[in-house]
Length: 101
Picture 1 (cartoon, rainbow, N blue to C red):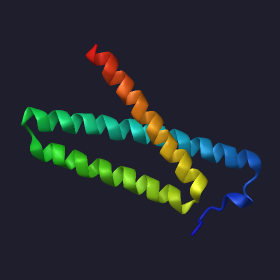
Picture 2 (spheres, rainbow, N blue to C red):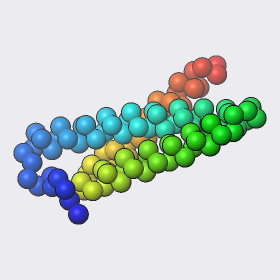
Picture 3 (cartoon, helix red, strand yellow):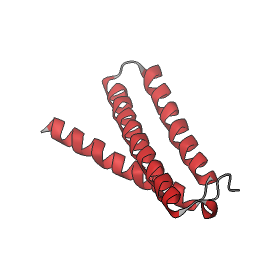
Picture 4 (tube, rainbow, N blue to C red):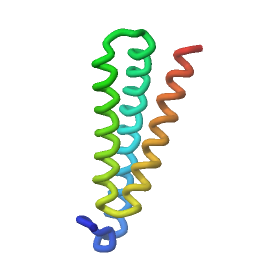
């Protein structure tokens, strides 16, 4: 099911669209893994378990929903967004590694 087929877009529109999906994936990845870090800290500290559970549920819904919406537009947007999520993960991990050092 394609709501927005990429075959009908001009080449420049396809590239711009994929770059937008990639950028959205990076933002989504940064948000997801930052929330993962916060919920891990909350679980480890033993306080505010309800907030940690809410963060966990929220990040699963956000990531799953965004990737599901991208998949409705076809494989290229889904792959671009998934690659962006991986890049976002790398950015968060690098920031946390520098903060720990």
